[in-house]
Amino acid sequence: MLKINSLARYQKKGAPGEILTEMTLIKDVGIDGDFHAGSHRQISLLSTEIRRWMDASPEKGLCFNRFKENILVDGLKELKAGDLLSTGDAVLRITGAKDRCHDECGLFSKGTPCRLSEGVFFASVEQGGTLQTGDLFFVL
Image 1 (cartoon, helix red, strand yellow):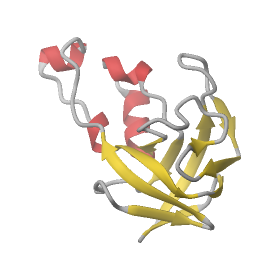
Image 2 (cartoon, one colour):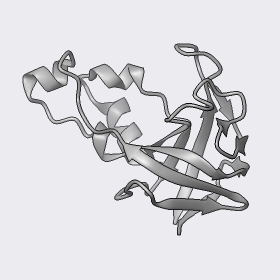
Image 3 (cartoon, rainbow, N blue to C red):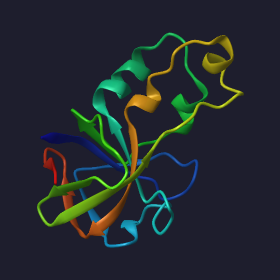
C-alpha cells in the first residue's frame, strides 16, 4: 500500500504550487487546473523518503528546485511503466520515471550520487476520480 502524503497543483509553469487536501483527476487529461494537464507527463509522483532526503541534503542538485511533485507518496518505489495505481474511483497508469541527470547539475558534474531518480514517477489518468490526502494507492 502507498499512502498519499500531500497533493499539489501548479497552475502556471514556474509559479508556486497550491497545496490541496483533495484534487480531481480527469481521464486522459490529468489534474483539473494543473498546467501539465493534457501533456505526456500529466502527473508527477515523488517518494516521501526522497523528498526528505532532498530537503536535508547540504548540497542541492539542479532538479531540487526544478522538480515539483503533484503527489507525494509514502512507500513509493519499484514501479515500472504500465503499472496501475488505484484509489477509490481513480486509476493512474505509470508512464515512466526520472531517467537521467543533467550535465549542468553540480552534483552530476562532481560525481555525487543523486537519489532523485529513485523516487520520481510520471503517470497518466486511466480513470478519473478524486484523490485526498491520506488515501491509499494499491498497485493493480
